[in-house]
Length: 233
Image (cartoon, rainbow, N blue to C red):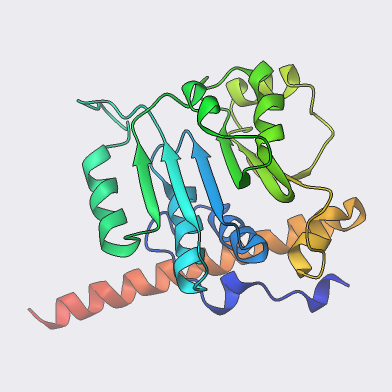
């Protein structure tokens, strides 16, 4: 019955960053469905997923503290994420929600107790945490929460997932896999679909359409902005 699912990302969401990232709407919808009290991003990088999580918290007005862990370089090179612009974006749009921690994710484990985290994202693509630590992080996630492993499109991410012994688990979409807890509130439509492996193929196809929608919307907005700018000259 996937046709009954109309996610929040199609009704409310207009991403301010990484609008063409196909995984961003799913992060937004997962946050909206879970309504976490504590969200943690291990290896936040450029924060495209992190800010989608923060957007959902702010736009749907529930209490949640969102922590981004990343060893941001003092002098980033090339495409490395830059700390100051991310902080400024967080202060402008997510004051009191977003917290940025300059710490290697592998060192963050001791800061959380078992069952404490409601939404956990792990970047598996850059070797920021060892695969053998994933099970310890899974215990930190509430049984009513979810774990998202990102970066599986890279050789490093694929090796991480194999080494963690999880290749057949969860809902796989593009570069991410979502594992929901056994006690999630299945009255939330997305959580119900994620909990039913028989719905996964249709759900993947659906989110391809959602990604196309946001990509086309971004293109239209860009054309409109360019036309308005030209008219002012």
